[in-house]
Amino acid sequence: MKAIIYLRISDDRTGQQLGVSRQREDCERKAKERGLEVVAVETDNDISAYSGKRRPGFEAVLQAVTEGRASVVIAWSLDRLQRNRRDELRLYEACRDANAQLALVNGADLDFSTAAGRFVADALGSVARMEVEMKSDRQRRAALQAATAGKPAGGRRPFGFDDGGMIVRPLEAAAIAEGFDSFLAGIPLGEVARTWNRQGFVTGQKRRGANAGQPSPWTRSSVRDVLGNPRYMGKRAHKGEIVADALWPAIVTEETWHAAQAILAHRAGNQTPNAAKYLLSGLALCGVCGGNVHAGANARREVRGYRCANSFGHFARMAEPVEDYVGQVIAARLSLPDAGHLLTDSSNVNLPELRAEATALRQRLNSLATDFAEGELTTQQLRHATARIQEKLATAEQAMADAGRVDVLGPLIAAGDVLEAWTNMTTSKQRAVIDLLATVTLHPPGRGTRTFRPETVGIEWKSS
Ligand SMILES: [Zn+2]
Image 1 (cartoon, rainbow, N blue to C red):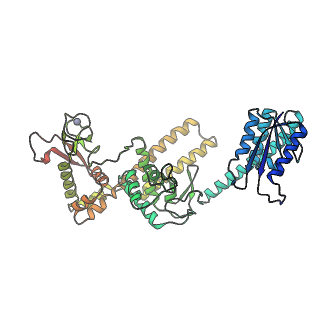
Image 2: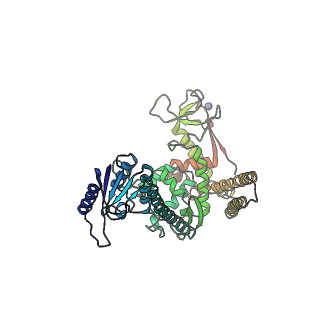
């Protein structure tokens, strides 16, 4: 019969030194006594390996047994052969399935090809299985307990906090708060990422490939992860559910966080991978067909231009005069004495009330689930009630999001020179302001004229 020898070098805390050469001699003697042909010797070194790391030698033994290349595994003792209960179970199962034997220098052999051997192995295996299950039960319970107590989950250092996840790093926290504000003001995720990168912040992740090991810069998706993490409003989530108030301080308010989620959910379906570089693309409408306006060069490619997304025939015109004009009109509007009303008018939203409503709706959703679990609701009733509440919740969240977006106007109105403040804004922020205030319609520029004619750009104020 063919045998495979397994040797393990481990940190002997029991003081009984057992060198690998001694293990090997003993195992080879055992093979000779039993008349076995040794086809391979596998060795693992547990001293250099940290716990949890796969043992290549052990895996090779399992594979040899499973593939029938060896029908006897020779080891010095059971505790040499297996390091933990999980491995023990895997070994028994592999041997049982292959009718293989365990031959031990120090201990009784286990022959899985006989009924008695299988019985002993099953008994040992079920003890092992129970221990494995109890351990993961304990771990699950401990994790849930930590979560409901609002303790940090551990793992990588969260952006904005120290290693333990409890102490705020002020500079990072300020960047996060600003990131939320910008996002609510309509700034794309990619631009928030660029801002953080410019400010010298990095993610906790390490780069792969070229520059492996260096910290990763921020990307749209890692910014999205931050904005979507309830940690930043001081809540502890567990398996995707918010389960407790966190022990660490919040960086943004609950309204801000929920408003951001509403926008993230809304945007999930219609992502625009490339942030708009043009002030009006996708924002203004074609005066001929009412369709979207795209950035598009006219005949001379070096000139930035706009055109109808549906047809070149509708219009194509130079971008710059249009953008200058729109900026001037917006600035003029915000310089009027009544500009402040734009803020109060469009933010006559009662945030605390909305927030309370949303909280109540979420609680109602939770209690529905309980009612269903206790058999007080049918599946049909649950589905109906859930849909109704989720609809109301979406409305409340959208209202909070709208209120958040109004923040973008404040600094403009407060500026001494609105036009200058406008000029200093990023394109994304300018777009957010236009989107909030007006509908812009672009008409054909008119034939044979080099003069910009304001009547070819329609600016219709949105009523709030
Ligand atoms: Zn058109």
